Image (cartoon, rainbow, N blue to C red):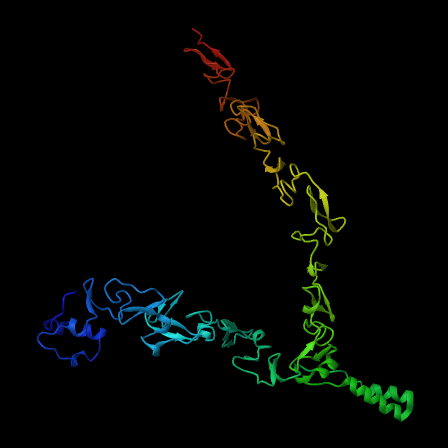
Length: 469
């Protein structure tokens, strides 16, 4: 039991207690035997500080009981913050599409901004200020003239003009511009069903030329007919929503209203390929797309095999070059630049650098395939300079050559450590026990390695000499 706070302490603690309990604390009266602890049982001392354990996330119910990040303290119990956001009880419960977010946020440059410990329900995923999550807003969009547009958020994705407003029925042309049930969004404009937005065109006036041609062919009647034909050819229309037939007439694109909603391009529409209702997904071979009004395999997977589109020349294909062709044991599928296709080729996995150990395993540049393993024959003592060329005891492989590091002047002590020459290029230094020596002047290696001059001698031109008395 925590020590009670008696009335004698109330005056000094009134301001502190009122922050935890009620601003109207001064209206309460106590008997001489009452304490703040009995009047407000959640008030306790934790680490020397007066604490309200009814709503303190660090001391919930009692001292040092910490609520998790997704919880909050209500009436001394850690409860889900989503259903008690900014307060306790059903009035503070977030909706099914909302999240409980802190009122403040952390700016990458400024640091914490606003209250970090106050929370409120936000429409995350639809509110541009919280599109990607709590306090994760959409960026401001700038066009070529540096004008800013307010972006909108849909299902956790920020929408920006113009591309996100061209065909979106909920945001057609701009944020929040919803098309009616009997219309749809076409190129950023709400058009009636079976009509699409067309930017218009302007053709050369061919009517007069049609009239002249008609007169030459058949007098006045021919002139009238020719002018009608010319007028039809020269007809121009401005921007607006037009029927599929009108758009077909002016663009030459084969469009039809197949779903009583939009004009489908029968040349490329996979659900209406060539004719309304012909779906490429219904084809016996899966993976086809609509090209030129026909369901075909895409160029990156052009081959029909096993009732699906695939690339039989792809390295990952289970078949080699042709449908059903599987390479037998001891052979690999290889591509021939000369032939332009893949075929099965017999290989030796123990020496083939392109198929070392198994098909497709290539050895790095400078490595050889020895016994089915990629080996650096420049430094491997068991395969020095080539496969199965083993160096003798005391030798190491330097640059593909078995070398004795104790005596080789070009690899003295270590590979590629060259002892060099003395007196320019007059003579070469020697390697003695892994160290470079000048045999012309070294008293311990005079003339040859290990030859020591006497006590009163010195090495002169490779010969131990005595002083002349």
